[in-house]
Image (cartoon, rainbow, N blue to C red; front, side, top):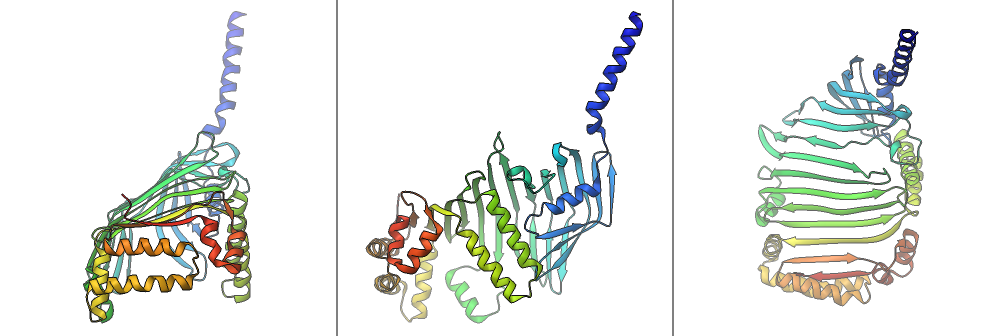
Length: 400
């Protein structure tokens, strides 16, 4: 009897284990995965197609893949075979892909060529449904990466990037996300420019070669619709650093889906001008659901300002110092036409200080409370001089 009871318990335990683990050992449906990847291209920006699909354990191989960008300039890119590594099925029909590695990209057209190496996505989550109202309805990745990118023209490298990467992190409760990215080792060779006027400007500004980096970081909370682009910086050697930030509210998941639907409508009939105009008006109307919280744009000079004044002065038959005085004299006249009200003097003082000693100049907009977009548009049309005060605009120069 004891042996019977023990055997029965083992059988029941085995049966329970089989039931609980059945989903984990179930074969991945490659066709379903590809269909859900395409469904997750929310704005209808493209379609991924495969000639055949193979499932090898937890890996899914998409053979003979092409990506077709939809829209008026529809074009297909041959990607070859893609291996989706360590794919697991999750609750609600979602999938998690540990890593997707893309083959090296080589495109040649006439005398130009384009090459990208070391492309991959890591920690990709494909939603089971795109109809939800939270982050689980979006396709997301933990990391996106590209190695060297090079562009050559007539055998000469004219543009290159050392590395580009981006990452997305979900909050523990999955109510918000943060993101950051960077593009490093940007190099542009402008010595091959043939247009005489452009070449003269490039030489005068000392921009024969341009080197720099780009960085971005921010966060988004779909429930409140608060999106905060904390930093977006272009930093170029011997030119300067341009940094921007902006915070908006009202960018909810519902609004995102409305934007996406409008974009799909525009792409569905790109040659119909009336349909495009109607969709454009609809897109503009959707933006009225958002509110402005704050923004800032700042430029830190690294030599381009003085070279710009010298070049402009030379074009006028004078020098940089005389051009600086001319600019300072023109600013009040231009500001008077812009109807900036009380801000006019503040801008003039900041511009004069920056021209005299080019270090940095910053424009900040920080209202006491967030301002709905319709209110901003109404003020801009009815009383433009009130907009700076409405948005809490200030301008400073050479801040320490």
